[in-house]
Amino acid sequence: MMLKANKGQVSYGESVGILLLETFTPFIPGDVGNATTYQFPVRFQRIEGFTFDKLLQKDPKMIDPILEAGHQLVKEGVKAITGDCGYLAMYQDQIADELNVPVFMSSLLQLPFMSSMLRKNEKIGIVCSHADYFEEDLLKNLGIKPSVSLCIEGMEDQVHFSQAAHEEKGQLDPKQIENEVVSVVQKMVKENPEVKMILLECSSLPPYAGSIQDAVGLPVFDYITMINYVHSTLVRKPYIGFM
Image 1 (spheres, rainbow, N blue to C red):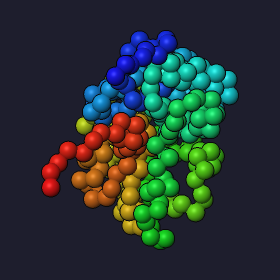
Image 2: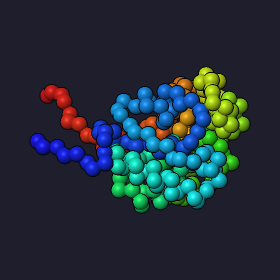
Image 3: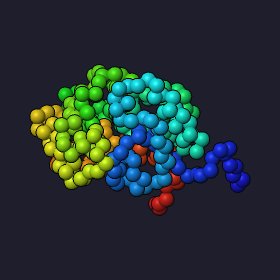
Image 4: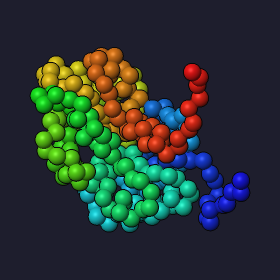
């Protein structure tokens, strides 16, 4: 079988491209920004000048560098594109309309699927980076109906998480952050027993998903469950077994 090179592409075999904000924090295994998180190759692309603060400010001028970075990933051959912050949901439609590969910018895109598995009186608990900025427009941009019942808790008051993710001190203590996020989820579930699933909005929280599940015994969704799922649709393999 004859195979052809793609013009401008100098490497191959990366199914998912990941757009990264300009941040100053260690990305530990399990974080979206750590390549060892995945059982398959991914390609990272930094969005020049796009900081977390600019994201929270909803700076409309940032769409140009976002699209430029997205086009670069497509040029390098990725089959789908995601990001490293759930609040990138505000750009979902613009990026998806511009690029010719599937785009899934926010972990929040899993909400309709999760909601469909619950009873009408049950809720999804969302742990986000900063609850003050978790606005209705984020969900509206993703086409998520108001009927989806949510319980939202932010990590902005957790000292170690905030120093690493918001103040960007350039260092973090995984055990301390694990204790903080587990405590937040335990409090959420205790005060809201109707919460039957957890979604971690922030791309830095998946490393602690196992500890969260051990603590509350609920299904835990995050960026990595979404990325793994999309990858599984992009790179199908034959089944091998016997009868």
